[in-house]
Image (cartoon, rainbow, N blue to C red; front, side):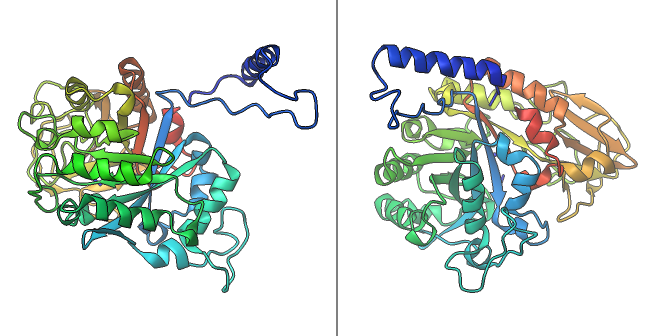
Amino acid sequence: MHSTPHRPRARFRALLAAACSAALGAGLLAGAGTATAAAPTAPQLKAGSKVVGYFTEWGTYDRKYFVKNVETSGSAAKLTHINYAFGNVTGGKCAMGDSYAATDRAYTAAESVDGVADTWDQPLRGNFNQLLKLKKKHPRLKVLWSFGGWTWSAGFGEAAKNPAAFAQSCYDLVRNSKWAGVFDGIDIDWEYPNACGNTCDASGREAFKNVMAALRSKFGSGNLVTAAITADATGGGKIDAANYAGAAQYVDWYNPMTYDYFGAWDAAGPTAPHSPLNSYAGIPKANYYTSATIAKLKGLGVPASKLLLGIGFYGRGWTGVTQAAPGGTATGPAAGTYEQGIDDYKVLKSKCPATGTVAGTAYAKCGSDWWSYDTPATIGTKMTYKNQQGLGGTFVWELSGDTANGELIKAIN
């Protein structure tokens, strides 16, 4: 629910010098050696190197996680893309989520990315202005505006009735001149097309494909169009409910939400890791694990290079648990900082340190609480899998769950 390997510098300089030398030899850099010589372009990102982090609009409230924290944690230097979450979908159109947080909130010098305070009369404040400042520091960083999510997906059914009008509304909002330069595209988090999430949708199997086709047509090849999609690989499950394979031609990539397979919404248990990489003896539900999701999508014909591996920067937990290994019974969700049964990695790493691993992820037993979450070590395991599968990269839900020094994001690279 709601997700770049670096060469040594000397080696990079050598490669760049060789490339420029070859270009000069071929006469490709017209005017080389003069004041108007063409500058070498930055190397293109290869498939496998994308690192996409969700930044939540509401994180600026209780969590006090500002765009500045993306910079100070070291995350901005590791990320290739940020998904700004979420815009709303209502009345068949894309709409603002929280305009105060997005464009109005005044940032103090201490809170601001560049140490400069907002003024009362500047035309753009809020998260959007802070993202502009972050992009100025990191010119290759791209930002997408994500629409929907668990709470705001109810509007997609209406939007699907007129995909062209929906796409036009999204384009007009994302490319609004008031925040020109902030966004490089759109991400759709429809949970879930022709299936049930927070609400149920009956738009039909082709609705998702039709919406993505309309968005690509409107946004064109110069903007990114991506989508977070279900990870349900069960027979007749959510992947089967919509034509994800048919829609793949219209997206730059998919973010299959390879987490939240299990959690304390099943209050009595059995305890199980929320993001298993593989199956394991006693897993509560068949085909409810990351490698099954990826295998299913690839089997449908979705190119591996258009699939990103999802990593959760949080844990899910139960209380009233006596058994340390997965599969124990529980009495309900464990206490969490913001809601029951869920907490950030930065909290859990000290509150309930990992005591074991299962299926490529970690779990922790402390007192009567049982949690599961990824650690830097288990993320390393998942990165090996991602590379072996030739996936397009990694995405994370969401950046505020990491430690102040970016322990988890650093494990991705």
